[in-house]
Image (cartoon, helix red, strand yellow):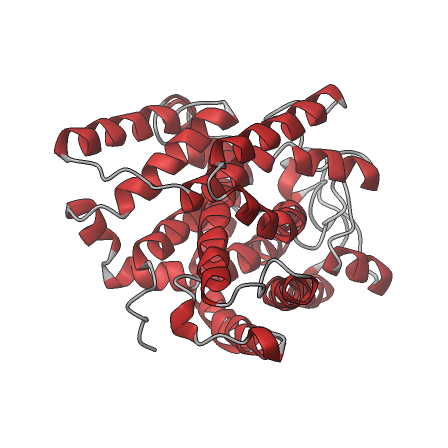
Length: 376
């Protein structure tokens, strides 16, 4: 399949790298223990995103805010009212529901199938949290699977696929992104509103950087507000006029990205993510590297890779629970994740995209060329 000229394949590649970082992070935290030097490398250097995982997720959120707002802005400019109207918003919401929902459901069904094949009860108490208490801690049921597919769980409720907590926030905040078009000439106000929402979330007991979902369904909405600044930063970048970085500025941005990669604070990661998006769109060796076919392919399957790797890691961990090596289990899961993601992209994600395009209201139908980039 050829890539449309207007598609920002460099951002695809960045998303693929971020997805791979999440895979490595989950493989790392599935290990009961690692050498001290490995821990130092993954917590005290720019490799920190592998150690804690959260920076890659924050980058996903910033990138999602950028590419979706960019697409919505182009769509509204081409067909006024196709976004900023009730029918337009409903079409957009339906499209997002299909694009996200069908792959999510497929990942849950895959996990349910694998658990039914290999599960012999909960893992021992000393098992790392991700593969012990968070995932496959009980046999799945249809009601539980349905609630997870609808993204209506909290805490460790996504036991079939723990990574779905991020989709809870992405789905909700994506539904609000059309509102960002009202801030085209006031992007700073958009960021201020988002920061206010995050501040309210902190006052309600959701500390920045420390809570993923909360302990109840109502708390998940408060937790979602805590991620508003990440999406707003990406949206503001799409609404404003991003500066063109010259040579020294690009070098300074690269250094800043490396420093912020080692940051423990979400806002530092958000700033680094914005710089990374700017740097990827500047012609040079970095952008050329991101256009390498291997990275482009990784970006193409990134959403599927994100969704399938945890069920596979849970499967290999349970298969090798008696005397097997956790490192071997993680290595096998990583090796299986890539072909599984390619299959899911081909047979689930692409059909979901085609189906999503069909539910656009006829009055707002656009040619593919009118949309510069489609997220996931």
